[in-house]
Length: 354
Image: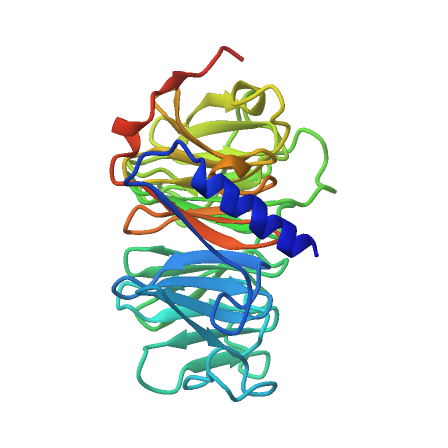
């Protein structure tokens, strides 16, 4: 019943929407010809125009208006493609410089070239200390892997290097949960959401390739950086953004400076939660909140998507693909917004002071 009511409301909002003609919202509810689940852990650009979704119910791939759903062979042979996914709960995914797809699970790591059987590493191989894969991040020809509560590993040119927490500068932050690269310097920023770390000790660390101690992590220390800012995203033109539910800051590894960007209350007086952040190619911040999606650029709100534009409230995940589609996820659906003239057709509203 609730789904039928939602569909009616969405239809009405489409008819009376004041959005530019060129703009459109396309929504998908989980089903046999759609995304497999709204439990989306990570979204990534794939080969050509593919968009890949690592979900709690297999791997979903969107391309040219059609969905492909892949499941573990152990539970469902329909859609099974050359051994991926290893497990139906896919934590994370990333392409390396050779267009090999890396998939991380709670107990395994896979590397798939798109043609042959994937390389599947699990605890039987003992190549890395842990196969609980928290995150994957490519830097050039390196693939960095956050593993369980044992720090990070790096794969390059057929060699695996393990950086244990205490020996690599991570200290008590043994469980690295998120990573992002600063494209301007090649620095790697990692974070931890371990709340048992003593008050005052940082949860954020940076590894600079030009450091005399490379590879070694240094603490990021700033009064603007709160201990629970363990969400991190790469900036389109360098630097990284870190955020919690209340605020977003920008970190520049070369200068080692942290700059406040915005607080959630600057978006709307009823906005109380930042749930996710994505960065568009032109450095527009696409922000998922309890009220919907906000686009912020140059200290101004350039777009706002709410239930009036067929996007329901409480967006939990956002992503901007290579075609500049703004993907969003909530507990009901997965969808995207696209507008060729986003910044021409929408009046920018300057952010109020914090």
